[in-house]
Image (cartoon, rainbow, N blue to C red):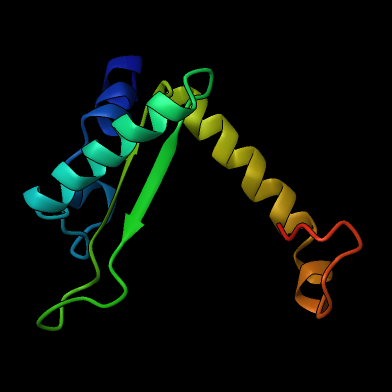
Length: 109
């Protein structure tokens, strides 16, 4: 696979290429609300990049739940942050599963 094909898959992939047979985009009205929320967050946090994920709790009519994301960050940067977050949380998952009391810092992860 050459660079142009990889770019197509990561940046311009269709729903079926990402999640074959089980992904539906969110409705247009939901996307409009997401855009408004992102703009508001950008006003409050102008020095930060923001990424928001939104997922339905339940699919409708037997279909898989819908989900989407929006981000002010470059896609490659957002992926790098997500990979780091996943790696960190996978490494400490066993510990987190055993924590029942509030941590000493009073801030949960």
